Length: 123
Image (cartoon, rainbow, N blue to C red):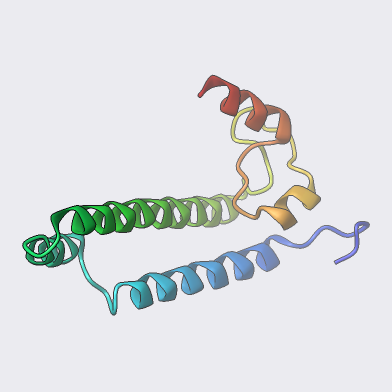
């Protein structure tokens, strides 16, 4: 990819689909297969009889990881929807084009740098 030619939406789409598949595979491996939150909680309840503090720590770590992965999946899905609707590469706040270099580095970017900075300052 050269700086004079921006990647096409289909290339971004392929990359996002690859990232989604990789993330789903990683989630399944971390859980020893596709395990629900309820199953994870039940597993920790059984272990909690042995060492409650360690079980709580492990459970909190797994839930935090799960929430982070869920957020990542949501960002990927939202980017794929923007590609589908023809809005990919445009800031969702101000409609300005998002520079290709930003999309290459962060393909799920939904804001230009200025709007992202403002959003982070509001937090």
